[in-house]
Each structure stands twice: as C-alpha cells, then as structure tokens.
Image (cartoon, rainbow, N blue to C red; front, side, top):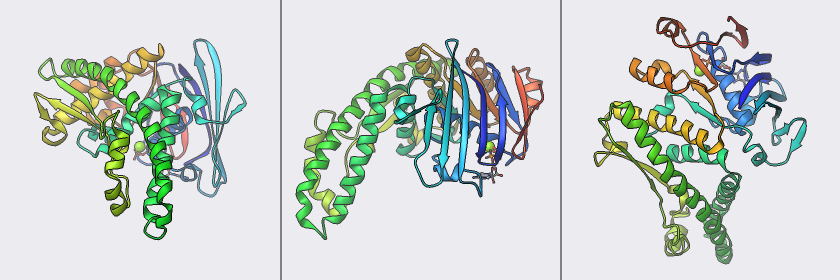
Length: 361
Ligand SMILES: Nc1ncnc2c1ncn2[C@@H]1O[C@H](COP(=O)(O)OP(=O)(O)OP(=O)(O)O)[C@@H](O)[C@H]1O
Ligand SMILES: [Mg+2]
C-alpha cells in the first residue's frame, strides 16, 4: 500500500496543507517545533485511528478551531482509496473510506499497516511493561479486527470492574455484579491472550534472526510472552484474588499485566542489558515487525521514522536503511547532511517551516 498524498486541515500547527508523497523515501527536514512529527502523527492516526503519542483528539485540533480534518489518498494493488478523518472537540471522530462513513474503527483494519519508530521506541526494552504491551497491541490491532474488538471489550470490562471495586465499600450489596464483569474479563481476556501468544511465537523467531544479523551472529535474542495469568486458568485466578482485589480496590491479575521478556545468553536484558544491547534489541523488534506485516498481509507497511536515525550509529543506520528498500518511508530529521554525505536514498525532500511544507526535490 502506498500513500499518494496527505492533506491536513486545522491539524496541530497546520492550517491547510497538501503533501504529495513519493512511493520511496520521503525526507522532512526543518528546525525544531516546525511540524515534522505532526505530519507523521497525522498519517499514523489516519491509518490506525490512534495517535502514536496517545494524544486525545481535541489536543490535535489546531488551537482556536473546532474541527480538524485529515485526508489520505492511498493506492493498494492499483486501486485508489481515500480515507477522511474528522476530529471533533467534544464528540467521537468521524471516519469515511471512499466517502462512505464507517461506524467502527475496526473497518479500517486491512487497508494498510503502519510502523511508527521514534527515539522513545528505542527504550521499549528498558521501560515499563505497559510500553511492551502497547507495542503488542499496536501491532495486533492493525492485523486483526477480532483482536481490536476483544481488547476494547476487555478494557471496558476492566474499567467497570475497577469502578465497582471502589464502590463496594459504600455499596456491599453490589457484590453480585462482580460475577458479570468477571465473566466478561475472562471471555475477552482469554481471546486477547490467545492472539498475543500466537503472535509472539512467530514474532520471536523473526526477532531472533534480525538480532543475530544485526550483531554479526554474536548474540542470540530470545523473546517470550509472559502472560500474567494462565490462558486456561484466568477465571480461577480471578476468583482466587477476589478478596484481595476488593481490599485493594483494583483488579490484580489478567492480561492487562502481561509482558514480553527479552533474554540474551540467559540474561534478562530488561534489567541487566547494557544500553546498547537494549537499543539494538528494540531495533530488531521494529524490523521484525515490518517483516511480520509484510508476510501476513502480503503487502508492505508504511514506515514512519521520527528523528530516529540520529540516535543510531552508522552501522545501524545502514542496516536500517538497507532493510527498508521497497517500503514507502517518511523520515523526519533536523539536518539532511547525513543523508547527503552517506548517499542514503532520498526520493522526495521537503522543508518544514512553521506549519508549511515546501517540496525541495
Ligand atoms: N493543537 C495544536 N494547535 C496548534 N499548534 C500546535 C498544536 N499542537 C502542537 N502544536 C505546535 O506544533 C509544534 C510542534 O510540532 P512538531 O512536534 O511536529 O515539531 P517538530 O518539527 O517535530 O520538532 P522537533 O524537531 O523538535 O521534533 C509546536 O510549535 C507546537 O506548539
Ligand atoms: Mg519532532
């Protein structure tokens, strides 16, 4: 899938801007705070319905405006598609594909896949489990409508159960309703865990290969899914923890506590890895993610590299840029000197300046 153009109206610091994109490497350069990341954010949002930085819709609307609009013109197997997304201050966003409004975000699944890569992603191994779960979720939500629906069902049920646990000290008579939420957690949660497990078992092999190649076969990276509760014993464990949950007023077990573990030579690099090991492993995971999308969708994802090249040494820069041949890529950076000096490919070059995008070549 290729993005032919993206048009922004009242999105962040853009009033109105249409940007034609090349099917190859598109570089956006410019000083700080000019709107480079905002372009990648708009693309990711329009393609996946989520902001990579978890921004709320109203935060992305241009200051002083009521609505924002993003339009992406896509080409998938020679068929044109148009996605329109309207962000509103106090209502849910509206989305249309080829001018036909869709009711659920899950209807976007299958059109295209997007990989966002920012310097923060290089810290995914050392940061909290929540970020590793987010990585899983951002991947699986793009691949599977079922996953998206089960995850959102789980999150809603979890929220309700936690509300109820807080209410129970004032209203002990509500205790029976706990069974209702438990049943929902188990139903949705088990489905979520199954898909995570299936994904990780295939993903781990890809990550291992990329990491071996990135480290000149010196390191073997073993990725495993650490499910917080057994896939078959979630109901039981939920029940066993019930009294504690009531006391603590929070749901203490379930897939919302899942994690991914990364081992090199038996050492858990989340805790004991060197910074370089952790960052290389994170890069391996991102590259393996591209491979997974490619293989499962028989299509290429769009890669969004936000200021990430300057964070990598030249070996890793080369490795990354060599692996993205034939993938449409949008890259932001403050200076293009590295690209020119190293003869990295540039198909389109844009200067971003205070909410304006100027095509330079
Ligand atoms: N809702 C909004 N309305 C108007 N302007 C906004 C809004 N949200 C953010 N901005 C502006 O967008 C600018 C930041 O844009 P962006 O994050 O894309 O910068 P950047 O070019 O990526 O900078 P850097 O190189 O520092 O990463 C800031 O000037 C900020 O004030
Ligand atoms: Mg930026």
